[in-house]
Image 1 (spheres, helix red, strand yellow):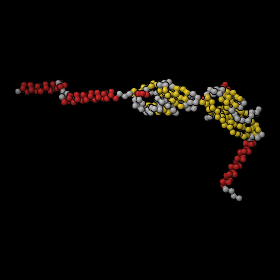
Image 2 (cartoon, helix red, strand yellow; image 1 turned 180 degrees about the vertical axis):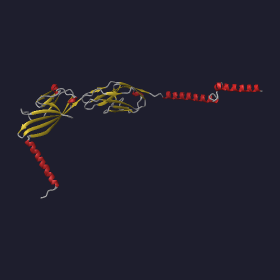
Image 3 (cartoon, rainbow, N blue to C red; image 1 turned 30 degrees about the horizontal axis):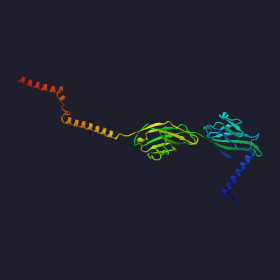
Image 4 (cartoon, one colour; image 1 turned 45 degrees about the horizontal axis):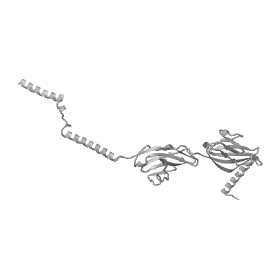
Length: 297
């Protein structure tokens, strides 16, 4: 009976799976990945990474690894590795970290191998450690002097907080977020609590004051030192007066030049030219010629 190409391909795949299973059984190896945990802890507190596996036996072999770009050993050959030696301890299959830092955040895997009737049995358990970090002192950008009527942005940012903090701006000690005096009834500015940007669409003299920003998350809050921002009003009358004076001076200079040209002060033949040595030489030559002519006669 002829078989279709699809049927032959299916038989080949089934044969490959059977051979692979027989190979693992012959070598006595099986694996299970049934557990996944998440542990959340505040920085500098303690955390327990639990390995959810069957009860430990004398023949069990345990390893803990931290996963990432590369795999690093945490517990190997019945000993803690690296800096975990000084700030962690083993409780059965579990690791108790006494002083968690933000660098400990990541994914961990415990591997337990033990002999069984079918050979060597390997069980794995994955734990994700999330470390909550309070914000640091945020960096604040506040201009010292601006012109009234311009668009001005004040910026606030923190790089360390986890989860990402929200930002609130204060003016002279009063919050600009939801303030009945400075917040909801003032449409001249907008505050983005996620990005930390306080924007004045048209700043006025009344917006002068001391500003600082506070970064806050579920762990804590920090604020930057206050900075003074001065809003200067543009002196329109002074600018107009200066323009009038300049125009007047330019007009006087122009009239003076025109008057001088009409009087001939800027003519091509000047008194200097009349008194020059060349003119004198010409006069002497003419006199000498007349004198010589009369002498000949």
